[in-house]
Length: 312
Image (cartoon, rainbow, N blue to C red; front, top):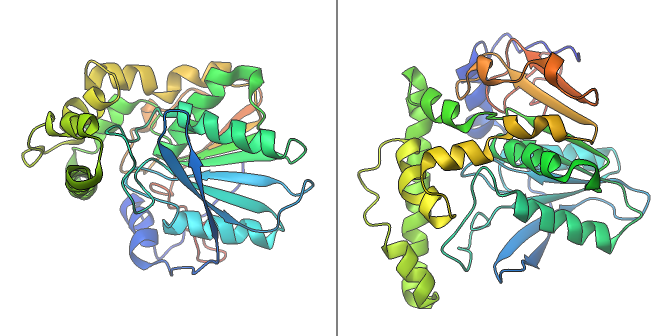
């Protein structure tokens, strides 16, 4: 296991979690944006950074819930990879790049089909270029689900996942407790804004049938938990009968045994979004899947003592 010592001036999971979004410096990277059209007519925006050639590894980066390619942990990772001479591409899930996507559906913790399209396109474009992926939180769950579904068919050479909600129903319960409610409130505020903006744009420019799907959801003002949001919004927009079915079908825990790509998973016991017991038993994992479970680190935090900056 890699040694990690949490910074003494950021004790506890909450301070580790909050440091990056609240205090980490923004990085103005000169990235190149590409719009990738999906098979269903929707799109994903990809933000590229770093040198490009067939010998240089390309790392696909996947953000978390209500994040984007401009999340500071993504920007920090892209800068770190460029310093190694590697190329990276940050994926914005549907509707997360600053412009609503074209369909009523959006993204969720199990959108491995969208990730598969990205990987297939990049692999076909440069078949000799080594591809790897790193996912954070929701993005980590999507990545592990994809790897399990693909088995040995994935062109990825390696993968890493950080702060993964292995069991989505546990995460929905954990974030309702204690101080973790502050994160739930922020997520819900941003998700409601995301949906309101989408409805407004669709009323003017959107497809009438897709707009009708958004209107059928009714008012979202009284939704007070992420479980309610998933029950009222995520499930019906993405073909699930309920939040419970969505959680069951999309939790990455149930896909880990089929992963056939060298994969590193990094978790923290003081993660305020997750129960430690939701994580898999390391002994049950395939030999090429390594789980690092650190005592501290928070949720997508891992602010260490050496450099004082986020290890991600």
